[in-house]
Length: 262
Image (cartoon, rainbow, N blue to C red; front, side, top):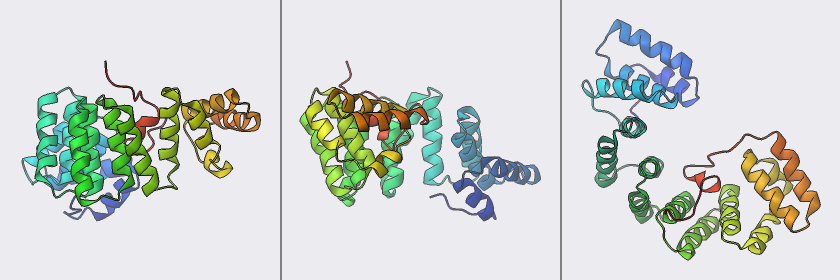
């Protein structure tokens, strides 16, 4: 986490709560009073990054970095912004520095792994996850993400499946992991195994899904196997769901192709 310093505690609380407009206003006011307020520039850069304004984010974070040492969260945001701006070399170098240096908690390291993936570097994402697993071997998300990146890197299907299954074993209540495996099995023409897992999803778990693509996929699966009541339930839920959903750090495994790259 960024050091929530410089008298910006309330603004940081708003940032964590997603109240970006109010945080933006506070940062602008602080910078208007002192153009060398590095922590205000840093927080403003994070607000821009969270808003998808990558050029503004990079500019603000670079400005902050000239005044104060950037916290790790801000450095990750800067690297991600470079990636979105197609400054690939800068993004890769900064992510590598963060990965190799160590000392980041698992949540931040997972962001580094996701950053490598967005740069189309799944093997570096796998290495990042491997390093997390060395110190945090029972973190289900790490294994799930590693399975996703293994598929992206063209690893054998059994490797991906083993990693996803390990994630499910570590966190059996995580519906995301089970939906991800169902999707994999469908794509691997193992629909009978997929429907067996899907049939164990409770109505409450289905009600909690907000990804239309996932619900439509489940509806099709149930329909193919003649489970009409559950197919109709998923179809009904899909009508009020969003188009697609990034389910967790690498929950993209549910909505993006997991087949090896060609």
